[in-house]
Amino acid sequence: MSDIHSVRAFLESAHHEWNDKVASFASRELAERPEPVDDAAGREEARELLKLMGAAGIFAPIGHRDLRACCIARELVAAASPLADAVWALQGLAITPLLIAGTDAQRAQWVEPALAGEIMGAFAITEPEAGSDVASMRTRAVLDGDDYVIEGHKWFISNAGIADYYVVFASTDPDQGSRGISAFLVPADAEGLTFRGPQIMSAAHPLGKIVFDECRVPVDNRIGDEGRGFMIGMATLDQLRPTVGAASCGMAERALREALGHAVRREQFGQPLADFQIIQEKFGRMAIELAASRLLVYRAAWEKDRGADRITIEAAMAKAYATEAAQRIIDESIQILGARGVLADHPLDRLYRSVRSLRIYEGTTEIQHLIIAGQMIAEAKAEVADLEG
Image 1: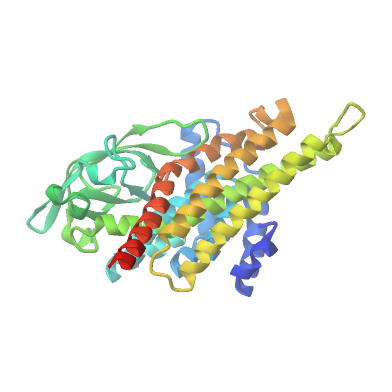
Image 2 (image 1 turned 180 degrees about the vertical axis):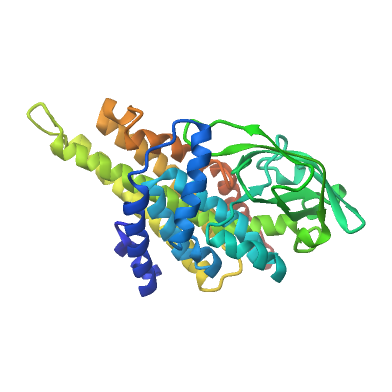
C-alpha cells in the first residue's frame, strides 16, 4: 500500500512489515507479467500465480485469520495484477468456510496445502436462478447411507475447471429455504462432477459452469452441521467483503498513479495537463474517494480482528463504497489519459475491464445498500418499540 500511513490507526507494527514484504513481492513477481491472451492462457497463468503466491506466503494471513493483513495483501496484489488478485480471492473463499466450520481432518487435508499454493479451491454457490437470492438455489443434496448424492449445476464459478476442490452449497431440505442449505467439500475428481465449459470475460479470469450428476460425497465431506450452509456462506462473505474493497483500493491507487504520471508529462496548449484546474479538480476528488475507501475497508477489518463476531454492516459499507469509488477513479483516470488509456496494452485498460466485476461478486452494491438499510431500520423500530413500550 503506497499510503499505509493514512490508515495507521487501524494497523500494528507487524502490518507495516507485511506491507513491505508484499509490496516487494508484487513489484518483483507480478507487475511485469503480461496479461494472458485468451481463456486457456488465463487458466494456465492462474495456476502459475497460485504457486508463486503460495511459495511467497501471500496466502498466510487467511490461515492466521488476520483480516487487516488480508486487506493489505489484496490491495497490493490487485494493483500489480488483477488476475493474481482473483486467485487470492478464491483461495480465501475456499479456505475460510473450513476455518469457520471444518473438521480437524478437513483442515489438515485441504487448508494447509491451499495456503501453500499447492492446491486451488473454488466457491460454488451461484446458479442460474440463485444469484443474490441464494435461498432459491435448486442444487440438491440427498443423504443416502454414508454419502450425500448431489444433483444440480452452478455457473459463474471462478476457477471452474482448474480447481482441485470446490466448496459447494446445496439444499438438503428445500422446504426450509435458506435454513435448509448445507455446505460440502467436493474434490474436483469426484465421480459425477463435470466441468461444462468456460464463461469468457473481457478480462482474463477463469470462470465457468459445473454440473453435478449423481455426484456422491461422503458424509465426512459436509462442512459444519446440516442446514448450516447458508450461515457458513454468509459468514465467509462477511469476513472477505472488506478484502474486495481493499482490492478496489489497489486498482484505484494504480490508476491514480498512472494518471498523475501522465498529467505531469503530457503537455497541451503549452503547459502540462496537471496545471489545468479541471484536471486538478479530478485528482482532488479521486484522492478523497480513495482515502475514504481505505478508511472504511480497514475500519471493517480492524473490527473483525479485535474480536467482533460479525461485521456485516462494516463489511457492506466498505465493499459498496470502495468498489463504486474505484470504478469512478479508474474511469476518470482513463479520461485524463485519453486514447492512450483504452489501448489494449495499457494498464488502465486492464484495470477498467477488471474492476467492473468487483461491484457484482460477493454481493452487488445494491444488496450491500439493502443490508445497511435493513440494519438501520431494525434498530430504529427497536428504539420506537422501547419508547412506546
